[in-house]
Amino acid sequence: MAPPDSPPPPYGHGVEDIVVQPPHTATWLVHIDRSMWVGGVGGLMLQALHPLAMRGVWQNSDFRRDPFGRLRRTADFVGRVTFGSPAEADEIGRRVRGIHRRLRFDDPETGRVRRVDEPELLLWVHCAEVSSYLSVARRSGLGLDDRQADRYLAEQRRSATYVGLHAEDVPGSLAELDDYFASVRPLLRATPEAVSTVRFLMWPRLPAGLRALAPGRPAYFPFGALCYHSLPGWARRMYGVLPEVPRGVVTAGLRAFRTVMDTLPEPVHDRAFMPATREMLAASRGRLGAAGYDVTKGLRGLTDPRRWPSRRS
Image 1 (tube, helix red, strand yellow):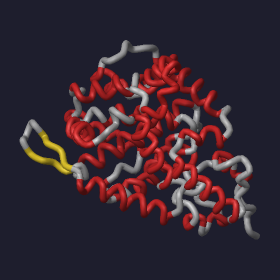
Image 2 (spheres, helix red, strand yellow):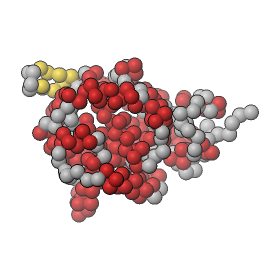
Image 3 (tube, one colour):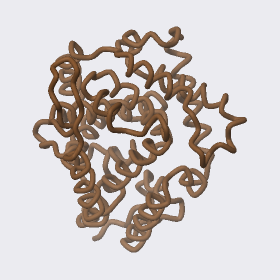
Image 4 (tube, helix red, strand yellow):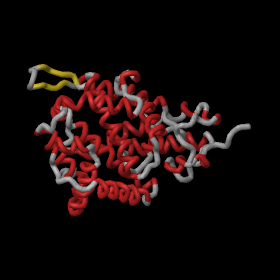
């Protein structure tokens, strides 16, 4: 596999008009990886440690009634600003910014009414999310070295602009991300709302449309526990919700989850997404196929550079 920290190939010119983050990017490798399901839930758990961000979610979100809906909406956003066209990414960015612009929440500690789209809160949500995606993917077996991880974070500055942040204000390397977390950790704590959220994410109530799956609900807990144990050690110590387990056991669990998920054909795996997300992914495959990419193995197959268009002479 060609390292994604190398310059885009000559034939890649113009592909950015087809897809926001093309197959030669580090973002493509991370976001197409099946470990994203663990990273996504772990990201929600990590985000909950910021008291103000948690209050904004608690007072405005229906995640307790429809946790899977929130996860699927997050997957739709991430998918569109990765695999979608620039126009699709711009459209969902406008939609998300418009929703956030209208939302307010009460801060009982100060008596103030706060905005959900305050830059401090948007930056925390972004950093917690991309940190979780990246760390879980690498730990699950995706072979990204530190240079490639830096490139992923630099690429994710663009994603941050869709929610209203300025790219230059967003950490673009592992070192910058570490500095950011060091600066924000004194503000974090496991509030009752945060602990309730983590417990809920490990044992969610099934929405009406999925009640038929209730007999299999106990099988979800190992997944939820894996998401919890994938959190940074300092975050788990703040929560103290589950007993600690050896790091090697968690890593083995992450690798096993990724291996099992990799056995699913792409059309089967993608049924977990909303219909609109599946339509967006199908359109992306169509555009890339028309541009000369071999999409017979789906979008995930494009992690192999041999499926990219031949170099022009």
